Image 1 (cartoon, helix red, strand yellow):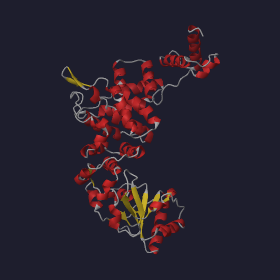
Image 2: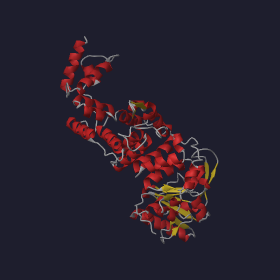
Image 3: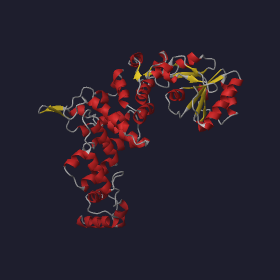
Image 4: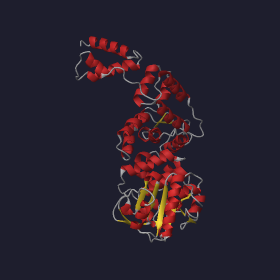
Length: 457
Protein backbone atom coordinates (compact mmCIF):
# COMPACT_ATOMS: atom_id res chain seq x y z
CA UNK A 1 0.00 0.00 0.00
CA UNK A 2 1.54 3.34 -1.02
CA UNK A 3 1.85 5.90 1.78
CA UNK A 4 0.49 9.31 0.71
CA UNK A 5 3.29 11.88 0.73
CA UNK A 6 3.29 15.66 0.25
CA UNK A 7 4.72 16.54 -3.15
CA UNK A 8 8.06 17.94 -1.95
CA UNK A 9 8.58 15.14 0.58
CA UNK A 10 7.38 12.50 -1.87
CA UNK A 11 9.90 13.54 -4.51
CA UNK A 12 12.73 13.32 -1.97
CA UNK A 13 11.58 9.94 -0.65
CA UNK A 14 11.39 8.47 -4.15
CA UNK A 15 14.79 9.92 -5.05
CA UNK A 16 16.36 8.45 -1.91
CA UNK A 17 14.68 5.09 -2.46
CA UNK A 18 15.90 4.94 -6.07
CA UNK A 19 19.45 5.91 -5.08
CA UNK A 20 19.50 3.35 -2.27
CA UNK A 21 18.21 0.67 -4.64
CA UNK A 22 20.97 1.52 -7.12
CA UNK A 23 23.56 0.79 -4.43
CA UNK A 24 21.99 -2.59 -3.65
CA UNK A 25 20.04 -1.48 -0.59
CA UNK A 26 16.39 -0.88 0.18
CA UNK A 27 14.65 2.13 1.73
CA UNK A 28 11.33 1.56 3.48
CA UNK A 29 8.82 3.94 5.03
CA UNK A 30 8.14 2.74 8.55
CA UNK A 31 6.37 3.62 11.76
CA UNK A 32 3.64 6.16 12.27
CA UNK A 33 3.33 7.26 8.66
CA UNK A 34 2.52 3.70 7.56
CA UNK A 35 0.20 3.11 10.51
CA UNK A 36 -1.68 6.35 9.85
CA UNK A 37 -1.99 5.63 6.12
CA UNK A 38 -3.48 2.21 6.89
CA UNK A 39 -5.95 3.89 9.25
CA UNK A 40 -6.98 6.34 6.53
CA UNK A 41 -5.31 9.28 8.28
CA UNK A 42 -2.98 11.81 6.69
CA UNK A 43 0.59 11.30 7.97
CA UNK A 44 2.51 14.36 9.14
CA UNK A 45 5.99 13.00 9.83
CA UNK A 46 7.85 10.42 7.81
CA UNK A 47 10.57 7.90 8.63
CA UNK A 48 12.69 5.99 6.14
CA UNK A 49 14.64 2.95 7.29
CA UNK A 50 17.51 2.07 4.97
CA UNK A 51 18.80 -1.49 4.75
CA UNK A 52 22.06 -2.58 3.13
CA UNK A 53 23.84 0.79 2.99
CA UNK A 54 26.57 1.74 5.52
CA UNK A 55 26.25 5.04 7.38
CA UNK A 56 29.03 6.87 5.50
CA UNK A 57 27.63 5.87 2.12
CA UNK A 58 24.12 6.80 3.19
CA UNK A 59 25.22 10.24 4.33
CA UNK A 60 26.94 10.95 1.00
CA UNK A 61 23.89 9.72 -0.88
CA UNK A 62 21.54 11.95 1.13
CA UNK A 63 23.71 15.04 0.70
CA UNK A 64 23.37 14.73 -3.05
CA UNK A 65 19.61 15.03 -2.67
CA UNK A 66 18.94 17.43 0.20
CA UNK A 67 20.46 19.37 3.09
CA UNK A 68 21.10 16.95 5.98
CA UNK A 69 21.14 17.55 9.73
CA UNK A 70 23.54 15.00 11.24
CA UNK A 71 22.72 15.67 14.91
CA UNK A 72 21.68 12.00 15.29
CA UNK A 73 24.40 10.52 13.11
CA UNK A 74 26.02 8.60 15.98
CA UNK A 75 22.76 6.63 16.19
CA UNK A 76 22.53 6.18 12.45
CA UNK A 77 19.86 8.89 12.04
CA UNK A 78 19.92 11.68 9.44
CA UNK A 79 17.28 14.41 9.53
CA UNK A 80 15.92 16.23 6.50
CA UNK A 81 14.14 18.80 8.61
CA UNK A 82 12.46 20.93 5.96
CA UNK A 83 10.78 17.79 4.60
CA UNK A 84 9.66 16.40 7.95
CA UNK A 85 11.70 13.32 7.08
CA UNK A 86 14.06 11.20 9.19
CA UNK A 87 16.30 8.67 7.44
CA UNK A 88 17.85 6.00 9.63
CA UNK A 89 19.69 2.72 9.58
CA UNK A 90 18.11 -0.23 11.37
CA UNK A 91 19.40 -0.03 14.94
CA UNK A 92 20.60 -2.43 17.58
CA UNK A 93 19.94 -1.29 21.14
CA UNK A 94 21.41 -2.75 24.31
CA UNK A 95 20.50 -1.79 27.85
CA UNK A 96 23.48 -0.27 29.67
CA UNK A 97 21.88 1.74 32.46
CA UNK A 98 18.64 2.90 34.00
CA UNK A 99 16.02 5.14 32.50
CA UNK A 100 15.05 6.23 29.03
CA UNK A 101 18.64 7.11 28.05
CA UNK A 102 20.32 4.02 29.46
CA UNK A 103 20.97 2.42 26.07
CA UNK A 104 23.79 1.89 23.65
CA UNK A 105 22.42 2.42 20.15
CA UNK A 106 24.25 1.30 17.03
CA UNK A 107 23.13 1.50 13.43
CA UNK A 108 23.37 -1.82 11.61
CA UNK A 109 22.43 -1.85 7.89
CA UNK A 110 22.57 -5.64 7.81
CA UNK A 111 19.74 -6.36 10.26
CA UNK A 112 16.83 -8.36 8.93
CA UNK A 113 13.39 -6.76 8.69
CA UNK A 114 12.20 -8.85 11.62
CA UNK A 115 15.17 -7.93 13.80
CA UNK A 116 14.61 -4.26 13.02
CA UNK A 117 10.90 -4.55 13.78
CA UNK A 118 11.49 -6.23 17.15
CA UNK A 119 13.32 -3.19 18.51
CA UNK A 120 10.26 -0.99 17.95
CA UNK A 121 7.59 -0.41 20.58
CA UNK A 122 4.27 -1.70 19.19
CA UNK A 123 3.47 -4.00 16.30
CA UNK A 124 1.26 -1.36 14.67
CA UNK A 125 4.36 0.86 14.49
CA UNK A 126 6.55 -1.89 13.03
CA UNK A 127 4.90 -2.10 9.59
CA UNK A 128 7.01 -0.97 6.62
CA UNK A 129 6.06 0.11 3.12
CA UNK A 130 8.26 0.21 0.04
CA UNK A 131 7.73 3.68 -1.53
CA UNK A 132 8.73 2.34 -4.95
CA UNK A 133 6.31 -0.59 -5.08
CA UNK A 134 3.80 -0.02 -2.26
CA UNK A 135 4.63 -3.48 -0.85
CA UNK A 136 3.97 -3.89 2.88
CA UNK A 137 6.56 -5.65 5.03
CA UNK A 138 4.92 -6.82 8.25
CA UNK A 139 7.05 -9.38 10.10
CA UNK A 140 5.17 -9.00 13.41
CA UNK A 141 1.64 -9.09 11.96
CA UNK A 142 0.96 -5.48 12.90
CA UNK A 143 -1.73 -5.14 10.21
CA UNK A 144 -3.86 -7.72 12.01
CA UNK A 145 -3.43 -5.84 15.28
CA UNK A 146 -4.32 -2.60 13.54
CA UNK A 147 -7.49 -4.14 12.12
CA UNK A 148 -8.38 -5.53 15.56
CA UNK A 149 -7.62 -2.13 17.18
CA UNK A 150 -5.18 -3.93 19.45
CA UNK A 151 -2.04 -2.43 20.96
CA UNK A 152 0.60 -5.13 21.35
CA UNK A 153 4.28 -4.82 22.22
CA UNK A 154 6.85 -6.02 19.70
CA UNK A 155 9.11 -8.13 21.85
CA UNK A 156 10.87 -8.61 25.19
CA UNK A 157 13.06 -5.52 24.69
CA UNK A 158 9.94 -3.40 25.10
CA UNK A 159 10.38 -3.58 28.88
CA UNK A 160 13.82 -1.98 28.78
CA UNK A 161 12.36 1.47 28.13
CA UNK A 162 9.88 2.54 30.84
CA UNK A 163 8.68 5.49 28.77
CA UNK A 164 6.88 3.01 26.53
CA UNK A 165 4.28 2.45 29.25
CA UNK A 166 3.18 6.07 28.92
CA UNK A 167 3.40 5.79 25.15
CA UNK A 168 0.90 2.96 25.45
CA UNK A 169 -1.29 5.22 27.58
CA UNK A 170 -1.53 7.96 24.98
CA UNK A 171 -1.71 5.59 21.98
CA UNK A 172 -4.73 3.82 23.47
CA UNK A 173 -6.43 7.18 23.99
CA UNK A 174 -5.56 8.54 20.55
CA UNK A 175 -6.58 5.50 18.51
CA UNK A 176 -9.26 4.05 20.80
CA UNK A 177 -7.44 0.72 20.89
CA UNK A 178 -7.49 -1.98 23.56
CA UNK A 179 -4.26 -3.22 25.10
CA UNK A 180 -3.19 -6.81 24.53
CA UNK A 181 -3.30 -8.64 27.89
CA UNK A 182 0.34 -9.69 27.57
CA UNK A 183 1.32 -6.04 27.07
CA UNK A 184 -0.64 -5.01 30.17
CA UNK A 185 1.09 -7.76 32.14
CA UNK A 186 4.55 -6.75 30.90
CA UNK A 187 3.91 -3.08 31.72
CA UNK A 188 2.95 -4.06 35.25
CA UNK A 189 6.52 -5.30 35.78
CA UNK A 190 8.22 -2.11 34.54
CA UNK A 191 9.38 0.62 36.92
CA UNK A 192 9.71 4.33 36.17
CA UNK A 193 13.53 4.32 36.54
CA UNK A 194 13.63 8.07 37.15
CA UNK A 195 12.23 9.17 33.82
CA UNK A 196 12.92 12.88 33.19
CA UNK A 197 10.01 15.27 33.61
CA UNK A 198 10.15 16.57 30.05
CA UNK A 199 9.69 13.09 28.60
CA UNK A 200 6.82 12.31 30.98
CA UNK A 201 5.20 15.61 30.12
CA UNK A 202 5.34 14.91 26.39
CA UNK A 203 3.33 11.70 26.76
CA UNK A 204 0.75 13.34 29.05
CA UNK A 205 0.55 16.23 26.60
CA UNK A 206 -0.30 13.83 23.79
CA UNK A 207 -2.96 12.18 25.95
CA UNK A 208 -4.56 15.55 26.66
CA UNK A 209 -4.15 17.18 23.25
CA UNK A 210 -4.66 14.19 20.96
CA UNK A 211 -6.58 11.61 22.96
CA UNK A 212 -9.95 10.93 21.36
CA UNK A 213 -10.94 9.11 24.54
CA UNK A 214 -8.41 9.94 27.28
CA UNK A 215 -10.18 7.62 29.72
CA UNK A 216 -8.75 4.64 27.81
CA UNK A 217 -5.26 5.82 28.69
CA UNK A 218 -6.10 6.37 32.35
CA UNK A 219 -7.80 3.00 32.64
CA UNK A 220 -4.70 1.38 31.16
CA UNK A 221 -2.57 2.99 33.89
CA UNK A 222 -4.93 1.50 36.44
CA UNK A 223 -4.96 -1.93 34.80
CA UNK A 224 -1.17 -2.21 34.59
CA UNK A 225 -0.66 -0.70 38.03
CA UNK A 226 1.19 2.41 36.87
CA UNK A 227 -1.41 4.66 38.46
CA UNK A 228 0.49 3.96 41.70
CA UNK A 229 3.19 6.30 40.41
CA UNK A 230 0.56 9.07 40.43
CA UNK A 231 -0.86 8.80 43.97
CA UNK A 232 -3.04 11.88 43.45
CA UNK A 233 -4.95 9.97 40.78
CA UNK A 234 -4.71 6.59 42.49
CA UNK A 235 -6.53 8.00 45.53
CA UNK A 236 -9.54 8.82 43.34
CA UNK A 237 -10.24 5.12 42.81
CA UNK A 238 -12.96 4.11 45.23
CA UNK A 239 -13.49 7.61 46.63
CA UNK A 240 -17.30 7.77 47.01
CA UNK A 241 -19.66 10.47 45.76
CA UNK A 242 -23.31 11.26 46.40
CA UNK A 243 -25.15 9.18 43.75
CA UNK A 244 -27.80 11.88 43.37
CA UNK A 245 -25.23 14.28 41.92
CA UNK A 246 -22.83 11.64 40.64
CA UNK A 247 -24.67 8.58 39.33
CA UNK A 248 -21.57 7.61 37.35
CA UNK A 249 -19.82 6.24 40.44
CA UNK A 250 -16.65 7.15 42.32
CA UNK A 251 -14.36 10.14 41.72
CA UNK A 252 -12.12 8.09 39.41
CA UNK A 253 -15.06 7.34 37.11
CA UNK A 254 -16.10 10.97 37.23
CA UNK A 255 -12.67 12.27 36.18
CA UNK A 256 -12.49 9.74 33.34
CA UNK A 257 -15.86 10.92 31.99
CA UNK A 258 -14.84 14.56 32.44
CA UNK A 259 -11.67 14.09 30.39
CA UNK A 260 -13.61 12.42 27.59
CA UNK A 261 -16.08 15.32 27.60
CA UNK A 262 -13.17 17.78 27.48
CA UNK A 263 -11.66 15.91 24.52
CA UNK A 264 -14.91 16.18 22.57
CA UNK A 265 -14.79 19.97 22.91
CA UNK A 266 -11.11 20.89 22.44
CA UNK A 267 -10.64 24.27 20.76
CA UNK A 268 -7.49 23.37 18.81
CA UNK A 269 -5.13 25.81 20.54
CA UNK A 270 -2.40 23.59 22.07
CA UNK A 271 -1.67 25.83 25.05
CA UNK A 272 -5.30 26.55 25.86
CA UNK A 273 -6.24 22.89 25.57
CA UNK A 274 -3.25 21.78 27.65
CA UNK A 275 -4.03 24.19 30.50
CA UNK A 276 -7.73 23.33 30.54
CA UNK A 277 -7.07 19.60 30.13
CA UNK A 278 -4.71 19.51 33.10
CA UNK A 279 -7.25 21.41 35.20
CA UNK A 280 -9.97 18.92 34.24
CA UNK A 281 -7.68 15.98 35.06
CA UNK A 282 -6.84 17.39 38.50
CA UNK A 283 -9.95 19.34 39.48
CA UNK A 284 -11.14 16.79 42.06
CA UNK A 285 -7.85 15.47 43.48
CA UNK A 286 -8.76 17.09 46.79
CA UNK A 287 -11.87 14.96 47.30
CA UNK A 288 -10.17 11.96 48.95
CA UNK A 289 -8.85 14.32 51.64
CA UNK A 290 -12.19 15.80 52.64
CA UNK A 291 -14.93 13.37 51.61
CA UNK A 292 -17.13 12.40 54.55
CA UNK A 293 -20.65 11.17 55.24
CA UNK A 294 -22.95 13.97 56.44
CA UNK A 295 -26.64 13.43 57.12
CA UNK A 296 -26.66 10.26 55.05
CA UNK A 297 -24.87 11.79 52.03
CA UNK A 298 -21.29 11.86 50.86
CA UNK A 299 -19.95 15.41 50.78
CA UNK A 300 -16.54 16.83 49.82
CA UNK A 301 -16.53 20.29 51.31
CA UNK A 302 -13.54 22.42 50.40
CA UNK A 303 -12.05 19.94 47.97
CA UNK A 304 -11.32 22.70 45.48
CA UNK A 305 -8.73 24.30 47.78
CA UNK A 306 -7.67 21.06 49.50
CA UNK A 307 -6.54 19.69 46.15
CA UNK A 308 -4.14 22.50 45.29
CA UNK A 309 -1.01 21.05 46.98
CA UNK A 310 -1.72 17.64 45.42
CA UNK A 311 -2.25 19.15 41.98
CA UNK A 312 1.00 21.08 42.32
CA UNK A 313 2.87 17.89 43.26
CA UNK A 314 1.47 16.10 40.21
CA UNK A 315 2.43 18.98 37.92
CA UNK A 316 5.93 19.15 39.40
CA UNK A 317 6.57 15.65 38.09
CA UNK A 318 5.90 16.91 34.59
CA UNK A 319 7.30 20.40 34.36
CA UNK A 320 9.06 23.34 35.95
CA UNK A 321 7.28 25.77 33.64
CA UNK A 322 5.94 28.50 35.89
CA UNK A 323 3.07 29.35 33.56
CA UNK A 324 1.60 25.87 33.99
CA UNK A 325 1.26 26.31 37.75
CA UNK A 326 0.07 29.91 37.47
CA UNK A 327 -2.64 29.08 34.96
CA UNK A 328 -3.81 25.58 35.95
CA UNK A 329 -4.05 25.84 39.75
CA UNK A 330 -6.45 28.84 39.83
CA UNK A 331 -8.84 26.93 37.56
CA UNK A 332 -8.86 24.03 40.02
CA UNK A 333 -9.44 26.33 42.99
CA UNK A 334 -12.19 28.24 41.20
CA UNK A 335 -14.14 25.46 39.53
CA UNK A 336 -17.08 25.75 41.97
CA UNK A 337 -17.28 29.54 41.85
CA UNK A 338 -19.43 29.90 38.70
CA UNK A 339 -22.19 27.85 40.34
CA UNK A 340 -21.90 29.82 43.58
CA UNK A 341 -22.02 33.19 41.80
CA UNK A 342 -24.90 32.11 39.61
CA UNK A 343 -26.94 30.89 42.55
CA UNK A 344 -26.30 34.13 44.41
CA UNK A 345 -26.94 36.27 41.32
CA UNK A 346 -23.62 37.94 42.04
CA UNK A 347 -22.87 41.43 40.81
CA UNK A 348 -20.20 42.70 38.40
CA UNK A 349 -17.57 43.05 41.13
CA UNK A 350 -17.66 39.35 41.97
CA UNK A 351 -17.38 38.39 38.31
CA UNK A 352 -14.42 40.73 37.82
CA UNK A 353 -12.74 39.30 40.92
CA UNK A 354 -13.16 35.77 39.62
CA UNK A 355 -11.67 36.85 36.29
CA UNK A 356 -8.73 38.42 38.14
CA UNK A 357 -8.22 35.19 40.07
CA UNK A 358 -8.36 32.65 37.24
CA UNK A 359 -7.08 34.82 34.39
CA UNK A 360 -9.57 33.67 31.74
CA UNK A 361 -13.21 32.97 32.43
CA UNK A 362 -13.59 31.15 29.13
CA UNK A 363 -11.10 28.57 30.40
CA UNK A 364 -12.97 28.22 33.67
CA UNK A 365 -16.21 27.77 31.75
CA UNK A 366 -14.63 24.87 29.83
CA UNK A 367 -13.51 23.19 33.06
CA UNK A 368 -16.99 23.53 34.56
CA UNK A 369 -18.59 22.27 31.35
CA UNK A 370 -16.41 19.15 31.44
CA UNK A 371 -17.18 18.71 35.15
CA UNK A 372 -20.93 18.90 34.53
CA UNK A 373 -20.65 16.62 31.50
CA UNK A 374 -18.83 13.90 33.43
CA UNK A 375 -21.86 12.53 35.29
CA UNK A 376 -23.65 10.10 32.97
CA UNK A 377 -26.47 9.39 32.62
CA UNK A 378 -27.17 12.75 34.27
CA UNK A 379 -27.61 15.52 31.69
CA UNK A 380 -25.14 18.37 32.08
CA UNK A 381 -26.63 21.49 33.67
CA UNK A 382 -24.77 24.40 32.12
CA UNK A 383 -26.93 27.18 33.54
CA UNK A 384 -24.05 28.55 35.62
CA UNK A 385 -21.69 28.42 32.65
CA UNK A 386 -24.11 30.27 30.40
CA UNK A 387 -24.69 32.88 33.09
CA UNK A 388 -20.97 33.37 33.69
CA UNK A 389 -20.09 33.75 30.02
CA UNK A 390 -22.91 36.24 29.49
CA UNK A 391 -21.66 38.36 32.41
CA UNK A 392 -18.07 38.00 31.22
CA UNK A 393 -19.02 39.27 27.77
CA UNK A 394 -20.88 42.23 29.23
CA UNK A 395 -17.89 43.16 31.40
CA UNK A 396 -15.28 42.40 28.70
CA UNK A 397 -13.43 39.91 30.91
CA UNK A 398 -14.12 36.67 29.04
CA UNK A 399 -10.58 36.09 27.76
CA UNK A 400 -8.47 38.17 30.13
CA UNK A 401 -8.40 39.46 33.68
CA UNK A 402 -9.19 43.16 34.10
CA UNK A 403 -5.99 45.12 33.57
CA UNK A 404 -4.88 47.33 36.43
CA UNK A 405 -5.68 50.96 35.71
CA UNK A 406 -3.62 52.45 38.53
CA UNK A 407 0.07 51.54 38.29
CA UNK A 408 3.24 52.33 40.18
CA UNK A 409 4.06 55.19 37.84
CA UNK A 410 0.90 56.95 38.93
CA UNK A 411 1.98 56.81 42.57
CA UNK A 412 5.43 58.09 41.68
CA UNK A 413 3.94 60.94 39.60
CA UNK A 414 2.04 62.04 42.69
CA UNK A 415 5.32 62.28 44.60
CA UNK A 416 4.97 59.00 46.47
CA UNK A 417 8.27 57.16 46.89
CA UNK A 418 8.46 53.40 46.79
CA UNK A 419 7.99 51.96 50.25
CA UNK A 420 6.53 49.12 52.29
CA UNK A 421 2.91 50.16 51.59
CA UNK A 422 3.46 50.90 47.89
CA UNK A 423 1.81 47.62 46.89
CA UNK A 424 -0.95 48.12 49.47
CA UNK A 425 -2.12 51.30 47.73
CA UNK A 426 -1.99 49.69 44.30
CA UNK A 427 -3.93 46.65 45.47
CA UNK A 428 -6.57 48.86 47.12
CA UNK A 429 -7.01 50.72 43.83
CA UNK A 430 -7.38 47.44 41.97
CA UNK A 431 -10.03 46.24 44.42
CA UNK A 432 -11.91 49.50 43.90
CA UNK A 433 -11.59 49.07 40.14
CA UNK A 434 -13.03 45.55 40.37
CA UNK A 435 -15.91 46.94 42.42
CA UNK A 436 -16.64 49.36 39.60
CA UNK A 437 -15.72 52.55 41.50
CA UNK A 438 -13.76 53.69 38.48
CA UNK A 439 -13.07 52.35 35.00
CA UNK A 440 -10.47 54.63 33.42
CA UNK A 441 -7.17 56.29 34.24
CA UNK A 442 -8.65 59.63 35.22
CA UNK A 443 -11.03 57.99 37.66
CA UNK A 444 -8.26 55.80 39.02
CA UNK A 445 -5.94 58.72 39.68
CA UNK A 446 -8.72 60.63 41.41
CA UNK A 447 -9.44 57.61 43.62
CA UNK A 448 -5.72 57.31 44.41
CA UNK A 449 -5.48 61.00 45.36
CA UNK A 450 -8.38 60.64 47.78
CA UNK A 451 -6.88 57.51 49.30
CA UNK A 452 -3.48 59.13 49.77
CA UNK A 453 -5.07 62.21 51.30
CA UNK A 454 -7.03 60.08 53.74
CA UNK A 455 -3.81 58.26 54.63
CA UNK A 456 -2.10 61.60 55.27
CA UNK A 457 0.35 61.27 52.43
